[in-house]
Amino acid sequence: MYRQEYPRPQFVRDMWMNLNGSWQFAFDDENEGYKKNWSQKGVNLDRVIEVPFAYQTELSGIGDESAHDVVWYKREFILDQSWTNKRVLVHFGAVDYRCEVYVNERLAGMHENGHVSFSFDITRFVCEGVNEICLRVEDPSYDESIPRGKQSWHEKPFGIWYTRTTGIWQTVWLEAVDFAYVRDVKMTSNLDTMNENFDFKVSNEAVGKNLELMIWFKGQLLVKDTMCIFKTEFSRSINLIKNTIYQHGVHGAKHGWMWSPEVPNLFDVQFRIVEDGHVVDCVTSYFGMRKINTDCGMFMLNNKPYYQKLVLNQGYWRKGLLTAESDADFVKDIELMKAMGFNGCRIHQKVEDPRFLYWADKLGFLVWGECAAFPSWHKDAARRLMSEWHEILERDYNHPSIVCWTPINESWGVEDILFSYQQQNYAQALYYMIKSVDTTRLVIANDGWENITTDIVGVHNYRHGQKDETQKYADFVKNLKDTEGLTTQLTAGRQVFAHGFKHEGQPILLTEFGGIAYDSVHEQGWGYTSVKDEASFLEDYRRIMEAIYASETLHGFCYTQLSDVQQEINGLLNFDHEPKVPVEKIKEINDLYHSLTIKQ
Figure: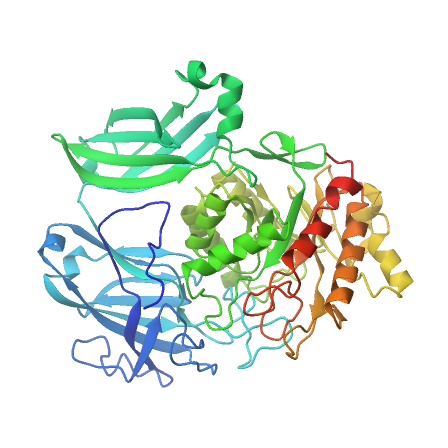
């Protein structure tokens, strides 16, 4: 059985049940499931699917790439007596795109948004013994108002578009909690003061009880705090330096406790609700003390300039598409990226699994968070994307590895943003909404070109050409030492800023480039340029990186891309996520930064 690891590693409880595995499954092309009461007990569906893999994938056991806009799922689960005096929650990592959830024939809830997690309280629907859960999922193949990212609207992938994903594609699980329980905790670090702020949400039944907060660093207990719960939402700020100066010193504590890719320090945390001396709810978590800001045209990490060396990560796998086969796949990818000399990645057109973000936190790896774009401008699409971003921020706020949010890519869905005040206003609304919810990270409203209000100017340019294409190559490096020239020239034939906006001192990063196709496994495919052998690949990669490192204006980059994806063969890894060339040779080139630049 696949994907049995705990699915929410930043908010861990002991009592849970993984519902991945074999489910009944059916296509409902005639939309007859309602009429035939497929949600009723005793009605069997005609196929079997392996959750959490979409039916289009090999690992699902079905592997059908054709379009089916309505699908159904069903399975039984057994609850023993220990669950009957608890509140029972059902959690879905992600279901694409909208779904209805039935428990024992009754509608437990509905959800729309295909890339984010959601939960329902099913306490009143379940009983001791055998229970049944059923899902009806809609994923309209040609609805352009739905955020779909890189999913193809044809049955076969083509160009930069990949096989679509329908239905459940992340872990499904049950959780038992006391009626007095911690619903959510937002943790916000202030590196300058060494304060950690906790914003708690608890159930109504928790009011009047005590909440215990404990913080450890590398096994040493730093804080044990007890507070009486007077309301369902409250905050607590803890100074981590107080009473630790003699052990560490102020300077030593700050610098010895900070999180970074080089030293990914994490604090362990436990939250406990206590009633009459008995623990009724216990959650374990963690946080990283780090600061993200910009200054003098540079990205700053922990109050120091930090040159970001990112790689574009599409998050696709040959057998599972958007869903990794195992937790080890996330660890492998991050370790390979670090071994190649990258210090972070940009997740592209996807909200990545919390397990990936957990390992980025643990192993030390910067992450730019993104989402799936909608194809074209529509008022329903605008509403849906805004809604999805609220849920993204709710789920992933606490991960220290995430340093930047990117709500829009290359004007996708806002194709007239260059001159349309309506679309500019929408993109700005997204920018300011995210900034109002999350003050700890940077936001790029529209990455690539036609930038508006933004914390980083992201520029995309694949026109590096072949070695003998001197004019094309000259265009690629043109004005890289000139901030005004770089931000006023065309990039890929597009203007860097939308009408009415200009560079205001933000860091400038080349956030997509490269895309060198290297056919290391004899697959047919394409890239932005191509080479025939390992030596040519390394020569071209070195040529491009030396041009970037020669720039006195660029303060980071994101190379396209980590791995091949179906027909795209421009990855540093193939579609099986194996290196095409020795990783140490890529690292040697990436490490040229230290000898070729004077930025730091």
